[in-house]
Length: 169
Image (tube, rainbow, N blue to C red):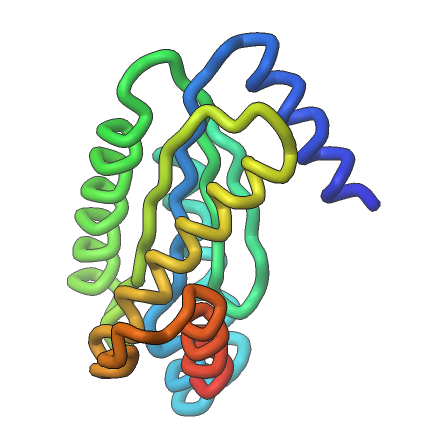
């Protein structure tokens, strides 16, 4: 499919340029609540707002909207890509703070995030980077709800619980 082709092209570019890859996963907090209280159109505007901010901050990155308020930003860099993503996240939060102050909306926009960095030699390793960033984002979300206190859970069980929490709204 088209997404697989994009990933294959991205992996080729990574291998050609010997770049580090940074993945930042973003999820809009309480998007379901925004949709329920202010309407789906407002929820859609919220997603578009965050996507535009990310696109503005990470002009040289690959910004992918996954739906349901989940987004990925993938950066290639020969430098400190993790620091670049952290600076970008700080800018994102500053712009969200400005949005919350100026929008006059009846809610405050906020996001969960997770970051993972590596130099994947193939599409499977790139997928692992993406999954780890998503897992970290979901781990932040789940820890706020004080789930996953059982350290004996496998990584797959933790991810399944995170998805259950995400899908529950």
